[in-house]
Length: 129
Image (cartoon, rainbow, N blue to C red):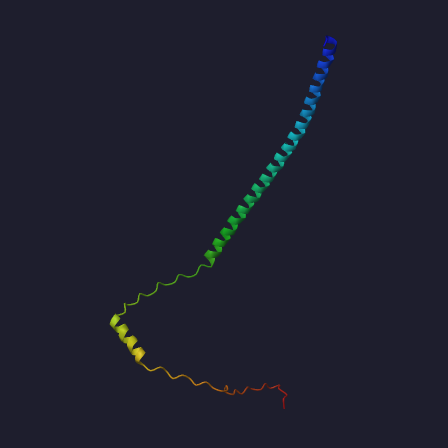
């Protein structure tokens, strides 16, 4: 190759490199712009969710305060302590149990065939004459 062919070849190669670099820069800048927009959208969504979380926490605190106030307002009166029962003597308990078992069983009621008749009062405005 001589100098006359080498110079246009190098110029074409340089021009091709510049066009490729320019197109690569344009493509990368578009990608970078898209990614920046995505990051911006994600950041806005994060801030919105943080605001909603803060509002929800405030509402929960308010509901808990109201619940506590209602519990205080409706607090039941304290119950008296149960009276202490005297210990039961084992011999007395055994005697009472034996006496209860030795008594005859109460007689069973005999079933009635019909219910007793109940006479209902008539109302004064009844016209069943």
